[in-house]
Length: 223
Image (cartoon, rainbow, N blue to C red):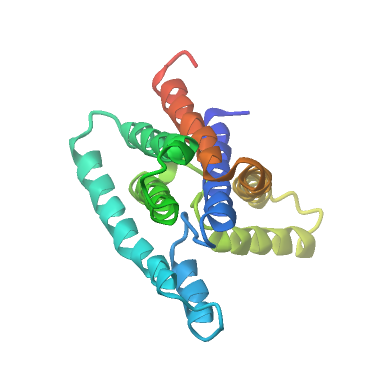
């Protein structure tokens, strides 16, 4: 697998993992594409499950905005573009470690601590969104939301079917790139769901460490 394929797959995997993990173990909160939280919030408002805690989902938006702004600021002052991924990895790892030790912090309200952990994960994914926007050529497409990638893959698939046998290598290449992104996200969703169900938010340690590894490998010219 080429380096750009590897980075694309890994980052999509991280996003799918974190998004699913926080949704399952973090009170149905999306960490990668926070606009989805508006829908969950609105649905809870009109249902019997509406509580004051539902408003926490709205807070993901300013946290996300702050993270993207921070990512832009760091990118302008960092000697390497992949330093942003290193910081994201540290943020996600801290989030997972906090979840791991949270049962020991009996003097702190566990619900409040859970929301803090989720918000830290949201901040980390905001950094990844900033990376994808600032350095779009480093991946095959957006790694944190799949609508655009699925749309492009569908267009490519349509062209391949309607023009079967013409040997359009450009379309086939584009289609394979989209499969790398979508496949990585789906794999992350599946593993994130299993581990979040099993060990809760502490599972976020795994994508955090994976992002740090991505940074280390990418900055190594011999990797």
